[in-house]
Amino acid sequence: MIKTQLAAASVVGKVLAGASLTEVLTHLWRADPALSKQEKGAIQDFSYGVLRFYGQLEAILNRLLKKPLHHKNLAHLLLVSLYQLRYSKAQPYAIVDQAVSASRHLAGGKGMQGLVNAVLRNFIRYQESIVVQAAAEDFGRYSHPRWWVDKLRQQYPHHFQAILEASNQRPPMTLRVNQRKIPLADYRKLLAENAIQARWLGSNTLQLEQPLAVELLPGFTKGWVSVQDAGAQLAAPFLDVKDGMRVLDACAAPGGKSMHLLESANVLLTILDNDSSRLEQVRQNLERLQLTAEHLVCGDAAKTSDWWDGRYYDRILADVPCSASGVVRRHPDIKWLRREGDLIKFAKTQQSILNALWQILNKNGKLLYVTCSIFTEENALQIEKFLESHLDACLLPLTEEALDDGQLLPNIQHDGFFYALLQKN
Ligand SMILES: C[S@@+](CC[C@H](N)C(=O)[O-])C[C@H]1O[C@@H](n2cnc3c(N)ncnc32)[C@H](O)[C@@H]1O
Image 1 (cartoon, rainbow, N blue to C red):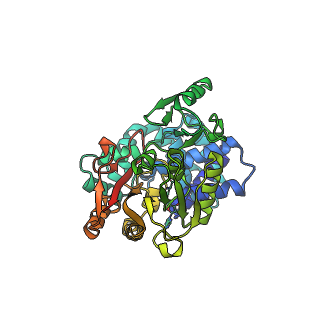
Image 2: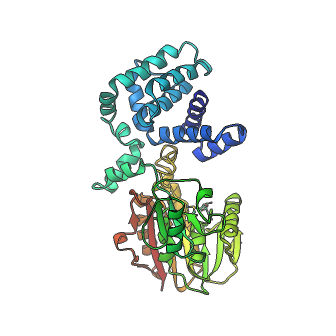
């Protein structure tokens, strides 16, 4: 436990200094191959948990300290311990003892045991009132950066609290059953036979009661099923692909939506992404699902002259790079890594990708613009601007009734996405 607390504290420190959580954890697994499955699970739980509730835990810590703590590693260890005390089922005094021992292993941590002990024991003693005090300000209440809360409050005056709360939940695990391989009813029967509880969310979408390792899913290696959020599973049906169409997935990796398109119809699909290592994941997905794309290209969607073969597309999926503010419950580091100014940069990139792709879309063809963002700068405002400057474009209604303005807000069932279906006249 001491080892996992220390490792998680170090992971949190690296993320708060600007690194991506996935990359830090991947690096740690490689650097320490002796870590057991349980240890990895604990490190993952502690670091995701601290980042999910960082605002709250930091506000709690500030209330428990008599003066600011300049020893950053120790502060991160305390955040991990506070997370455990508030959100785990472990025995409180065992957590405190381990944190006290762990602090001895930190450089400069000697002589800090008294402080660690006092802070954590005071939390146990006054937990409920301290948690209430910590919620007095937005940062402690919602565990999101202040600029983020302010922006959501301004853009969604009636929904911002629900959005923030949904973004702090643990995400569900959702499956897409491959209709080319197995009927939905048969797959549901298989899950039941394996004592895996799942709920049907419509179409080929099943949500598991409890997340589990993909290897435990029946037929996963045979391509019968993929893991994909329910909100992301709307893309392929919205794009309305038919056999024989030429389709471009312009920002495709790791390929979740590409695979869904290929499962839906016999299309001639060009898969494009500007990141060659992420394209490797697309290749693996194609292999597992036994699907074939016409072309797999590494290139910049905004520079079509570098890779376009001159044949227009009937359908284009533009799942553009974005703030990822709609998928924070899966990636809680995002909210601490983003800066408000990033939105302008994303919006510029999105605009240049959209403008370039529009030129290679067939007449009467459809382009589906997608982000996993909840900020209007990347979504409704972006499309408004596009329609003003492209008189040959019209916005089509989406088939999902609840999505009349294209903005899917995160909730228990799905992540946050934005969809705009454009047709070329
Ligand atoms: C939101 S992710 C796509 C997720 C994917 N559609 C799926 O469903 O699995 C955005 C992708 O766009 C790629 N990307 C970013 N800028 C790009 C550009 N200028 N041209 C092409 N791909 C780009 C990134 O490498 C990333 O893989």
